[in-house]
View (spheres, rainbow, N blue to C red):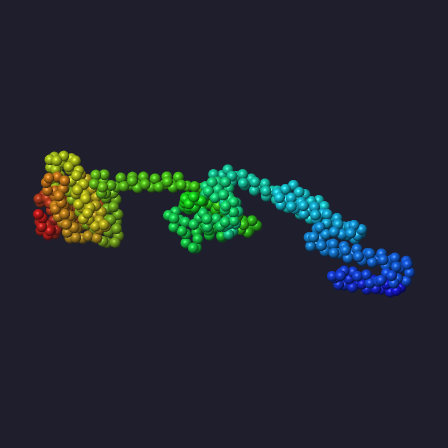
Length: 446
């Protein structure tokens, strides 16, 4: 084969490689060197064949580096692979540096890969800033008097400060990756479980909304339901929801204090509205309730009767048996009447031996019948003194222009007539229309 034929074959081979690439087999030298026409041309062919081999090796080497195979070897004499070997050394060193960064060494710097070095170094600076911020945040949350949880968008725990661990008894290692609400926020304060649709806190975590509550309970590892005050806020980066921070603290003592206040307030209110001797409403409470009932009767144009009564010859009881016996009679009187009024009625001690009953939805006739029943029950009762005890009753009915004073005054006047007409009887506000003689329309007395 002469030189012209050889050059044509080599040219065709290179043209095909330029068109289709090296392919699986790479560059195949198309000339048999031993067939060269002279020694000089044969030497040239052998040199070209070596160049083809080095190009093939360099191509495979570059291909291996591109695939991340950084331990691939290449001939030291391959002149085409020298830059690739330098790149291989840089990539090996960069790999080592990246592993150092992964292990927490943020002191690494790259200065041998041009623009990539700038990007890598910017990343390292950003990581250093982030780590510094995280350290500051950790320091802050460590000394906070509140528990702090950081959860992802699905509610899985990714951070807990020491106070959260102390309050709930769960270590961060125990809770990492857990759906926090499934563990600590499952029940109401009374122990009943939440409905399947979940809670407001769960909704806030999923939707990235802010949420505050002073009426939640968290379940501790011990099983205790701890009342907490909490605030949750979304973590948003670049307009994207990244998770939620939940801060909470134990309000057990505050709850106990509030309950104590409520108990004290209820006791004070009861004391302020209750007659200390008989346990029924006192005059102050009665006056407030009467004003409400008058307003209601006027608004709905409904009827309402007032019954005023007092114990007959009470002074004689005190004089004969002493004030303690008199107190016992008052207590017995309250017990008897309280047992015979309706649940809608209002019964109170007006003062001394006088009592009042508000009877909603009662006309004057019904009020008189009601008072007559009470008079009979009192007369039939055996009191704690060795004598018969009776009471006299006065009845008035609400009129559209009535005030508290006018309504009670008419009942008082009727009671005065009952006393003057012999006691142990019922008188209505209009004596002519509602006069009742003793025993006229009542059950017989013994």
